[in-house]
Amino acid sequence: MTDVTSDFQASKNGLLAPATTGYLVLFVVVLVWAGFALTMRFIGASPLATADVALIRFVLPIVALLPAIPPRLAALRRVRPRDVALVLLGGVPFFFIASEGAKATSAAYVGALIAGTSPLSVALLAFVFERKAVPRKRWLPLLLIVVGVIGIVVGQQQAVTTETLRGVGLLLIASLIWGAYTIGLRRTGIDAIANGLLLSIGSLIVLLALILTGAVTTHLGQFSWHEALPFILVQGLGVGLVSTVGYAFAISRLGTAKSATIGSLAPALASLLAIPVLGEPLTLATAAGILVITTGVILANRH
Image 1 (cartoon, one colour):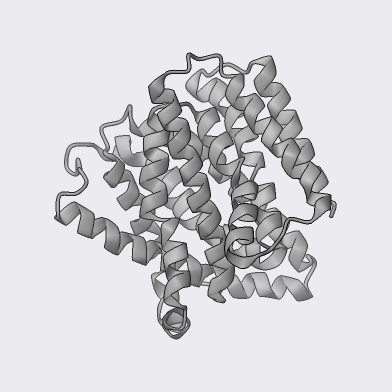
Image 2 (tube, rainbow, N blue to C red):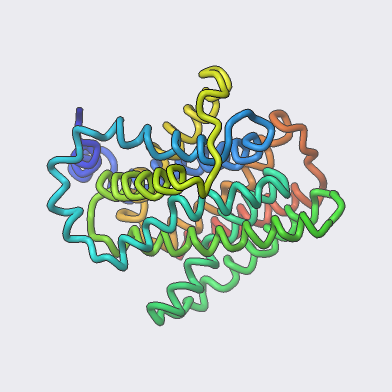
């Protein structure tokens, strides 16, 4: 198997600058995240339990990256326990909380309240735990992202029930968890593939413990490969492999704040894809929210 990190490193001396490669990889990650928002909504309508989709999410990357494990064992052992904990928050805790939030809302909510607010979560957590203040020049772009997220949520034109508010709360908690995960990726000091392995292997151990103790439900043996295929493609290969390794790589090239900010484009894309895939309408408020988020992302990346 080719060492992907070496290929990326070689681009420094090739046609693409490291930052350019980071932007290209992050663009692919944003596409995958939009698909993540859609498939999280599909779980409730499928015969698969959340734990089954989580298994797909964590097992496939491990299988795909098996040849990369031996040369990275030493580096993985050097990661501090606190940083391991931050990364693992992006595994089982994030997945189950995001899944519960998605069941009570819509794809637009999932995208807007997780990816859309992740720059704010990263900024908040960086201030609380690392005493890093947000530069004044980033206040306006972040404010625009917040306004855009609110526009997408308000624009859904669905009744706001207690269950909807519960879903919104869970998705905001998932955003904070994702922010902690993002900071953890930067702090580990290991390459993108090693980060992907750390997340997948650690999360699989936790998930298997939950399944074996009966803490979570599984429907293994009660669904077909055809029914599992969308989750294999999007959650296993897309989110589990491409976005996990790609996001860690993008952070190493672009930094935590910029990567999280560009990731804010995911809710806009998810809202657009939800129109043909899930039949969710694109209202004027939603369209305006997409435009405002995009403007905020562009302004944030000029600094």
